[in-house]
Image 1 (cartoon, rainbow, N blue to C red):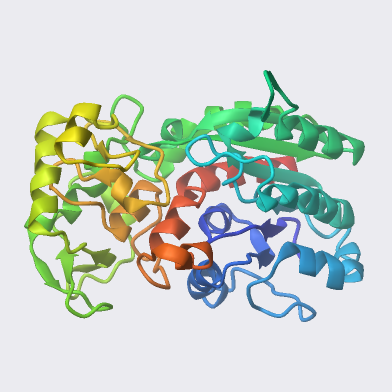
Image 2: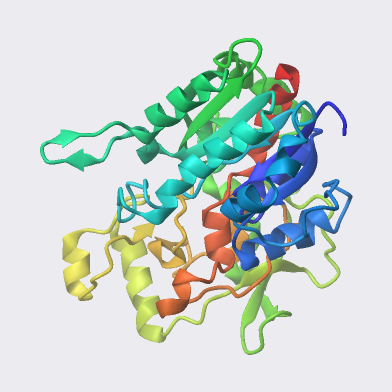
Length: 400
């Protein structure tokens, strides 16, 4: 193992791992419970390019972190002094202000599993990501309890880490999405707070290295996805019968050129760029919302009443600014100039996944299956944007 070896916890489909790989880190293994998300991670980063030096004692498959702690405790302890970084944060659904925020959500207990894993391996540096709601205590009567962020910071300090956490807006780092997340960094030497100063100081140099030209310090949505319009033309989807997929047109922004590096344009079809089959009345409704709604704002009660809509969130997107935070539900958003929801590839672009990154599993699921399946939209909605992760990885290398 080299001096920049990491373990990726709650890795999802690999957004953080991709960014760390691009910044020069070498993975040992990744822990992800979902078969769907792990399948995407495996397809893109484990099978290819030797991104991970997977240990012989751990099966190369999806894992529950608690099972690893229970069954491989001695193996984890043997990694002490060999692992420079543990990255990744537990699932955020129980803390999210956008969802049904529940203190008793079983996934919240994974915080203790995370801390136990850190205690066993004792890496030099920690990188932790979660939703903004992680910093807000749950209400107990008229008062709020202690935020989980405070709990984690105190636990990590007891393990000997200097720890600092801060809310970060990824749109300030070139991602075409106003996605605010709680980032926590811990280190056994030096000051963790320096991470946040350095990642800001490094931005200009990073963007220059990527030939990435921002507009007024942001990447607007049109710069991200205007080459993927349905009006460019369609062909039969290569991975789903009876569906149409979109064709590339010429890249018109530096962001599009960056995302398209290494793609095979033989058939001009972008991966996972399958369009939803909207009924005629849905198209008419979406067009009305585009014409009468406010961009990047939830539709008015008046529009909901007009169409008898029970859905809580429907947001027409703005072409000239980053999007709001992408959720795991694609019908929360309407494309900025076409009466339809976004495709998986457009979702991926907004999360800064390159077009060479191929997503596995079904596109969407409904009903009871949503509890166990993690389809493509959900994988992307839960991910850390690789473009930010790469910038974080550069600074984390300097902290080892």
